[in-house]
Length: 312
Image (cartoon, rainbow, N blue to C red):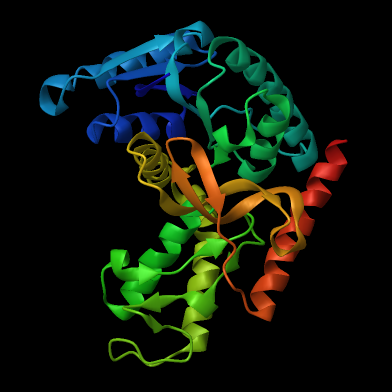
């Protein structure tokens, strides 16, 4: 298994944003693009590879599943889109599960030791599906989860308090979706809790902060309404997770993992702070939550379970 070889399945907007981020940040020596439209994957590979003199050597190629043999990490961005405007979410999900069944068979055959990073939506349900379909251990199958939502949250909080986003310590946990949970009880700047306190001269404003949460929840809808898709930030999220794995940084990230009793929840995949290293999931951290946050996490789990029950 070669951590310098990264596979990406699906060369749409998200897959190529991930490939570009990996290429630009020099996180791989070899990137293999796999797509049912091989011509597109070939064109994308050529286009990106021609930037090597400006960035550094990285072999970018289009291939099939057999080309992923030996890859350390494989990013799954593949999925089907709505066949018609009136197609139900459930039917769309069922078709995506079938796509994942085929991908799981191929990857178990050609790259059984690779870590799988799921970026397709709904990421929590599809991560659970891949864990169930693949023969590899669950610690090697994770989803991008609420790391993107957390990044959006910290960006907006940083603007509100006029500090660097990297100085914000706050999480969005639970489902990557409408039931996601802002964890205000531990949100802080320089060790000072945001909830109820004046920070950097800005008094606590519950209405303004609630507005930030609404903007986080609606961010994807806003972007899709204007440009038709989201891709750049999730591409950076994928690269960030891969950097953590590749360098065994043991960073704590809110990614999609399968719970095993945390908050009384089992056999559901959602996002909690998770230590990520070269073996994928090292351990899950269940932070202390207030009553409202705990109820929110449990609601997220119930929402996801209801969706999965419909698939049976």
